Image (cartoon, rainbow, N blue to C red; front, side):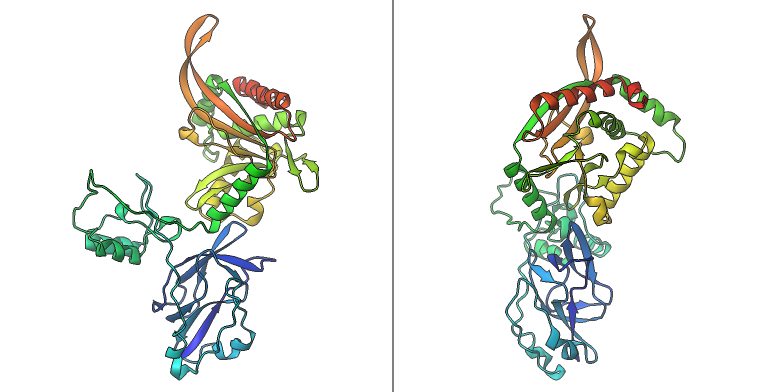
Length: 422
């Protein structure tokens, strides 16, 4: 028997370290070739790390939230044969979060001595699935839950994005949670707390939001827009579109309106380097699309929106949003936006005060389109109305200019034919 050291490979050009997001194995587990060992994250991209060999896990180095250096040992696995520990040991690089040098392992015949100082990583507090959401779990976990009579929607998941693991099933069953046909009891007092460590993408989001609110004096502006004519046009275009054309929602129209109006307000299509005291006004319009994913809010970017028509805009929004949700977006697709759109779709609510995507200086948030009674020519009529929310960096954009900008956008949305005129 020998020891195989699994080292963090290069996960991207120029990357020196990555954050450990979640372990998928524990000390003592038997792993098989190509089994997912750990998830790591760098530059907003979460990467699965499969193990290239089969064996028994002897040690895991680092806990979720720790930073590991490229080339550093993440795990030690007992394998058939000699392994790679003997040759690799002199050049071993310790993970960033574990700077103390590791003692050299004993020969293969005494592999049990290597595992003595090993401490299993502290488990991440489980997440309870959102009400009505389909619980995340592998087919094997689902099959085992059916055998135990456990309904997965009641099992807190400790895996990435609340994924339910076999250990979660064990813990739930141990506390009497699993019984065939059981349902969540009503009117039962609950005690205790779930301590969720803020790591990975959620930590990056928190840091960025904090940075945005700390550094940017937000100015919010909200106006209502009569979307009746645009909705009529949108329905017609969807009904008569070609088979290879995407279905249109409001976003492509808003994007085209932004493209037409932004040249009049160059200070809004900008990024503010407040450390250098320079506002970079961009000629290209790169629109960030705030997208909710299983791992949190991500902002993929539609590059050069000024060069795209309605159909191409819709197609590109769908492509980058899907890539973000499936964790397949490239680094270039997650950076470089000059202005951002954030929309909750049908859940848009009455109004929002969106947080600016630092270092941009503006963000636009369309809200829900609702039938409302309004007065037109002295008569009360029902129109499809939408509130358009926005926030601006008041250091760069004056309130009057922000109001004028939104009024110009409003005019194009209320008279959608003008969107297509040069």
